[in-house]
Length: 169
Image (cartoon, rainbow, N blue to C red; front, top):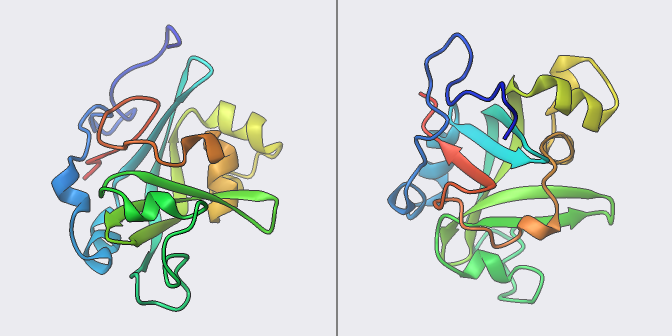
């Protein structure tokens, strides 16, 4: 962790360590999607702590034809069929990583956009641009900015290590 790391969002008093528990995720994906707005995604990578406030999320129930779980479990979507509160990360069009949070039984919520709140310099470096509103505007962009890749697929978001969601409200 960098020497300048603090456990709060600067100027807001929001604790980055207030990790969301499994019960938060183990609900209907539509409810979870609504309740994710305003929460924080926290990522520790390369000794730096990055954070963004969720501003857009999209629910996918198992019976939704647009869901990766619609046709049942596969090696690619296995994380969707595990316990609630895990990351389901997949590659879109062979290029961009996209992150979902699982809500159980094949349902998940896609994180579509964040407002950067911590580690903006690192996000700018990772994205190669300095227009703040575009840093995390879109699922692929937010994963690139936060260094989220297929390696995080299946990661337990309730453990408070490397990648987690915090209250933020």
